[in-house]
Structure formats: structure tokens, C-alpha cells
Image 1 (cartoon, rainbow, N blue to C red):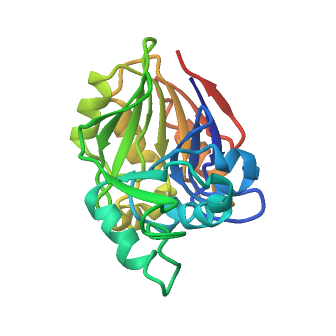
Image 2 (tube, helix red, strand yellow; image 1 turned 30 degrees about the vertical axis):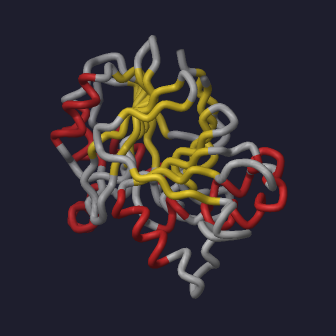
Image 3 (cartoon, rainbow, N blue to C red; image 1 turned 180 degrees about the horizontal axis):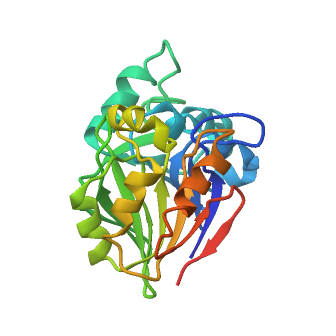
Length: 256
């Protein structure tokens, strides 16, 4: 298994693409603007999309991908879009509503659509062939989750967007994380904004990482454009006991 980082920015600017990860060549974990760097052939190979929550920077690629590959996937099963029931309801009512975007859960026909919406529950373990992905708890302004790709050498875990959340750390300990992708959306001087929007800032991150076993590789994601140096400097000043680095678009992680 391998995970390719397509996007890991908190918003857009030149060379900044929002969150999307590609597991092998057929499973997307979140579908932000980073999806747009895939070729048409790569897009057409995607069979499953896992969504952490309904915010635009994580779901924008879903309707655009559907439009791009519909003709290339004639005769194939629909792309399965997996999410919490609340996330899928948001897609139905606010995105695939005919006003913002056509309803690709009924196109090119209701009998053979390009997309199929599949609900999951927090704590569920999803199976894609011999790959297993656990749905992790998160705490955000809308119902949200993270994901752990389970492997023999430990799990690759992605928190999604989240404020400090004890149930998340209980599961991260249980699945024996080896690599953790965790958001830090704001600087310390924006801690009030982080609290209101249920995101992390460096001081909160440092407190949360104390709950993680030593030796885990930690990758910081969801930093706003232009803020990376400041956020990483504040994280570095914490002198964390883990190996902490900024996640980079294009990075490929090979999983055991």
C-alpha cells in the first residue's frame, strides 16, 4: 500500500491545494482541490472516495471528478462516496441539488449513476480488498471523522479537521499509529479563532501529542497559505518528543 499526498493546504493559492490523499490508485481520502492534479486516466481509476466531513475544501473534487470521468466509466459500477450520514445529506441537499451542481447520483441515468453515496459510522472498519480503514472520531463544527489505514507495521492515521478530542486519542493509541497526519490550521495568536472553528493551533497540538506514544512520525497539514513557516516555528519551539514535519504535496508514503 502507498499513500500519495495530492493536497494538504488549508486553502488555495499558487502551489497550495486543499486536502486529498490517494491510497494506491483507487481510493481517495478526502477530495479537495489536490484531486485536480490527477490525470484523466488516474481519475477514472478511482472507485471509492472517503470523506472526513462536508466542508468545501474537502469535498470540492467529488462533483468535478464525477463530471470528468462519467464518459470513461460507462459500463462500470458507480464510484462509491463514503461518509457519515450527515455528510452525505449535506452533499445531497447543498451540492447535488441542481442549483450548485447537477445530481450525479442520478446521472447519466438513475439506473446507472456515476456516484453512489454510502454511509458509514464512526468506529466502523471499512474493507477494500485486503485493505482495512477504521473511521476515527473527530470534533469539528460539522459532524466529522478521521481515518486510520491499518497495517502490520502500524497505522497511518489522518485526523481530519478536529479540535482537541479525547476519544480520538484513545483510538490512536489503540491502533498503534506509526505515522500521524494532523491538522494545525492557525497560529498561537489565533487561538480564539481556532477554538471557535474547532481547529488546532501549535500550543493545543503540543498538548495533544503528549497522549501519543514516542517515536511516531507526525506530519502537519491544513496550514493556511503563507502561514507555514510561522506555524512550524511555533511547533518547533515546543520541543516535541516526536519527529514533526510539514506535510508536502506530492509526498508518497509507503505503508507496511
